Image 1 (cartoon, rainbow, N blue to C red):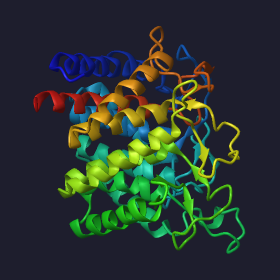
Image 2 (image 1 turned 90 degrees about the vertical axis):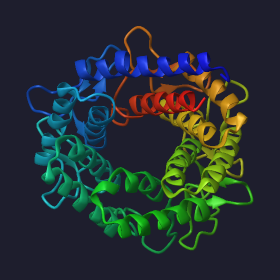
Image 3 (image 1 turned 180 degrees about the vertical axis):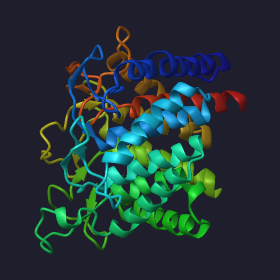
Image 4 (image 1 turned 45 degrees about the horizontal axis):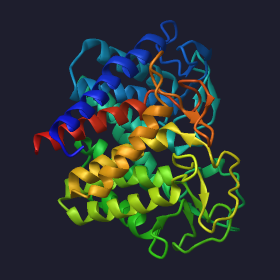
Length: 394
């Protein structure tokens, strides 16, 4: 990996997988030519097995094709793919006040209320990136207004849809500040500089000081409102993939803010989390763990998931590019070898999403309720571009 040829070869591997295998899989199989939007519930070969449409995945696919159009090549078919999804979302995806539903029928009728703030986050990403590609002020306004809604809801994300009894165990979650680290940069071109600055400083504090536990060097998924530890199922929960993914968001912020010490801290946290979450017996990264070593409440805790490994690859290669830490590189090779051996499908394209602990394919779907055109192609893009950067810097 230290040799230029190896970096070149790896870079081509990720680029080829993205442009010749993963993206064609979605271009061929996902468009709903009759009602608009995309099918995401696709089996191994790309056949549709359910027609419900999930706002997370619709929006993520709009974002992905807009990103490719903006940063790889201005192919008209990529822009059209993004527009097809965006127009479906614009018409059916929200309640009229830009509160975004969780899921719809194939035709666009709402199925699940707008309880999930991440629908709003991914809609913001989608319309923000598409506004760059299309030049549409209307799409830019949707992104800006939805972002404002997110900020208003941030202290009580589920609002009226919260099923928990108020006040008994009020925990706050890592997921929203984590995604705001990325979202703030995603739509920076649409926001006032002071709003970007205040949002970034707030979420940086949350991620790197509130949820990060100095004693263990790990990031918790949930803490008490004052940042203290809650000795409960939720409070003990570790999600290694989330913590590691968040660290490449922090690395991007470190570049944007010209604060290299942030990247160094992010590398330290990512490596510590990876070592803690790595399955020494079978390889791969556990999905959930309990910080005290107790049995997690999630029965799927020992599964190996596609997004966890792909986000880890992004974090490790960015960490190496920014800090030169050789440990990032050796772990990158280890995770790369595991991921390509177990998740990639050479025959039908795209990647499997769910493996059992032993690394065997548990579900041979390529898309479903949670897996769509996002983590695999975004990961391929990020790793390819970071490897190119390393190569060009010698």
